Image 1 (cartoon, rainbow, N blue to C red):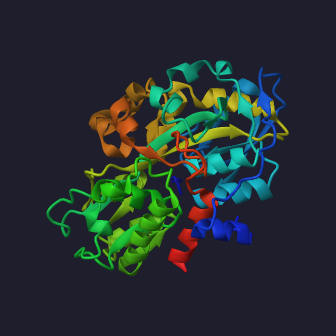
Image 2: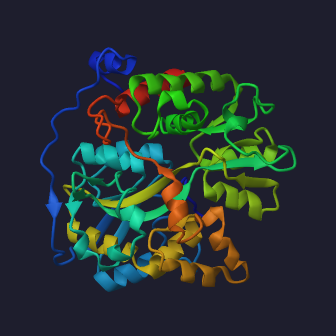
Length: 400
């Protein structure tokens, strides 16, 4: 069974920016490629995807949304899987050409900045109008830039606070069990190995150190970034596992080498369904999250097949299959009833955290979804924030 598994800083200028000497100045972006009408399918489609997003019955004969697509469009699907979200950008840029990609929020921003993906006309995808409003509005900043729409939403989910309920008592109320240096679980904490973890620290600090003035965990000034990374550096000796593959986190929880930490819904679901003692808490500070987006390559050899795939991926029946298999929430809420039907006697699980409380707009809106940080804060403060280069450099220093 296949599940979600779901550039270095190269100049002294960026190094100085990360240390606060001056904000990094991104290069002037190239013009945006915009794809409009969907033409005649070219007969082939090459995708880069996270495992679990392109199922053709090979993993389980009951799980197949690729074959009906091929029969409908005449586009034969080939796929290269990324083992983790961190692999998406380098694979897409260096091992193409691909026609399209399922991109996490931070990766989507980097691909847009590189102009490696094209903008699209949402009117070409009838089911786009059914997508949960937050994913077409205030939470769309990872794939909608300056009015250009660079893809269609796929699945989303929260980055949960997981804990072993037989050991970690009482139930954690917040992220202090992870970030407090006096946590009794020192050495048995799991954290995601990515610069996006800086946003989790920033979200925690927004509640515990309000004097920092953090209002958006992805729009951090140098002082706010300093505070978040200082917290993570202080935390580092207490972390038992920095994970990239969720399977490694599952193994660590099963062996109880870790008993608390951040994790994806799929890890929670698998740990719970195999009779384990791992549960998910809702921290008072809130949660970050991820929303993956199907995007078409700017130089796609088969753009019409990719546009057809994007249209196909938004259908409620396809979204329901993806959500059930992948362990996440569908972007199209019309899929929720189908998901509940598929769950049968366990239909109530669709309202659980493992499926992002399917269709719950308020819950979705509460998540601070991953996106690429930029020097332009995006909230009226101007170019006083820290960009992805600074975040990546700081995370590297924590992990060295």
